[in-house]
Image (cartoon, rainbow, N blue to C red; front, side, top):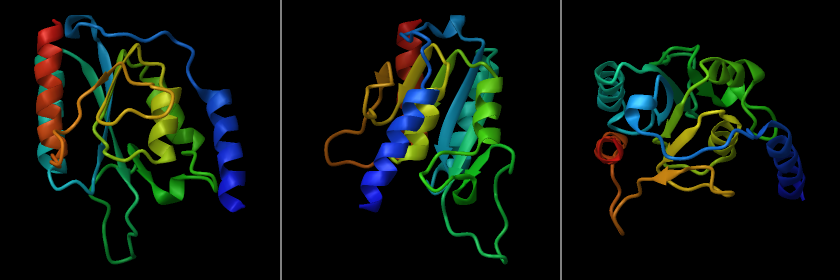
Length: 177
């Protein structure tokens, strides 16, 4: 029963907040700003962050990285990412929608490209990907409604790290132009 109610509210959120900006594949030289989603629970998260920042610098892209961190952090642990760009479990409402502050921060950069390296299909990732006004969306796993224009998936039966997936994203973006 509770899941059915959650689904109703989630569909309502998606109808209300989903972007209507047409998307499609863009060559990298047309991308001036970008947003990337990464999961801090991935073992390669630090290396991936450095690779993403280097890619942005190399292509003169103003880039933002948003971290998804849904771990249970107790009072003894410290957050390993910027609190501003990190979406924590406490930033989600009862139905899984990220806070308005986090959504506005992502939308405020007005990105041309969105790259999601998160392996999950959880609602917060789906919501952020669908409400993004980016004109070119790249994902690791296609979400319901097909918001991603390009999906770089793992070979059958193999689990790759975010850094390995980002290497594949870079290779495809280089071929696009």
